[in-house]
Image (tube, rainbow, N blue to C red; front, side):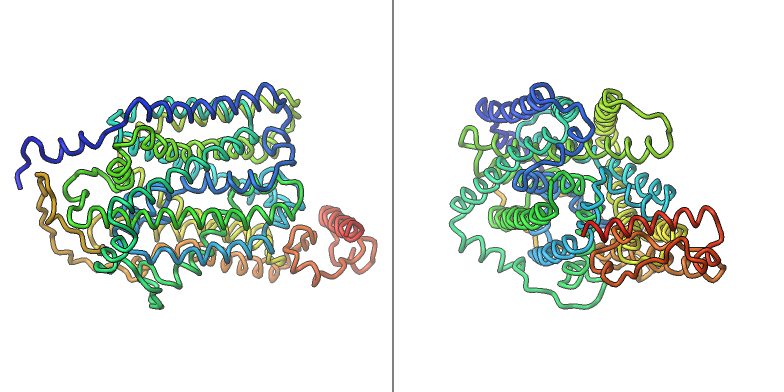
Length: 612
């Protein structure tokens, strides 16, 4: 149809019902965050490095668990270049869109989440927590050397800087959908509030604002689910409309790795993806290390998994609700929603728009997730700059005051850089896709390097570095090639049925003619993005093992790591190292440097045995 006055533009304008009560709710949320920053920054003294970065290592399990859930909801939804065809930036907005477009198969990733909690608490977390480190990349220098540490921390820094602008930009789009307020107005305000309370209050401010913000998110999702279900006609109507279009899906047992989502890719691939994102990611590990005991840290992992699963259920149900509401008038085709990020905000304004204050609760929830992720990332990056970029390469010892100023300076500088990058993201949409691709390229190799350190004592530093580099190069080729294939239309994943037959307003659908694609795409590029992290980790591990073995064949001495650098399951099999004074030991390792290092290993091992 031809668009006429009173068509889709008028419809969109009528749905922007953000009242003064909604603005009050939104401003109140920002004000609470600022007050928390003032309290922890000026009333409570956070001047020491330990207090600022780790809350004095004396934080409580439940607040930390809630903080972990809050910050995860602004993680990138897709781990790979398929993001190009499904431009959805964050879990809170992306999960409902996944169900709307592709069905409920993605729900089975929760199996991978719970498997991750078992592996993480038994293998990775005990090592980091017992070492009492601040940055988990410190582990790489203890286990390998500073080259490997620098490799890991640089990958983390580049990925984080590319991702943070999306954390700010995507919620701003949602705010624009429900209010009409330009993103240029809202993003500086939100960013400045976040930079203030993060730089002032440190990790304590981050965690306690997260507690408030996750409460707002739970409330927002519950309101949308309950009121939306009532308006549609009940749970039965929601279920039947989705069942009729095959959106309610049973587990897909297809072993084909090119299938977009299967039970195998979601559980196994999801396990590995979540291990990287939760077990060796500085933004998450830093909060586990802020807990005083390993037992408390393990409990926080399990509570995090329960909390994130509950919120996933809310998000996935909202996806079913979106289709039940718009089953005969797809807002994407009519352009009522300009982007897939705006489907959930559109539903919110449709079902809550007539009740003053409730849309404000939802928007506050969306921005709460943004503030949580941004503040956590800024705090973690300040730890990485201090521990991984300054201390290993500069001999000058900083005073507590100088350290405090350095940490706050990093937060302020990085926050301002990310705010500037938001405007670049807005002008160049492909940056969003490239950021997703960058994350897919780096996640697997990072997990592979940490896994070699914790589970494979025979891997040396050269092997770990070579493995990480090869994994990065391999995944760069793989992800970028798949990205280009998707952009050129050579790889297409069909979505579920969408209809515009019941629309009650006028709209225009642009007809596009698809050109035939003649070039053949490598089967490797069709592999599901859910396998990317596993593939990158396996490449890194295989190369690392091979290089380490070659080094031994060449006669290069490999010093076995201290037992406390290995997973607890390996420590029981670890034999006492020979005493550095033994004649056979000296003949085997006739080098002052090697003898000194091995003496340190022996002393560390002996001390560990005495402690335990």
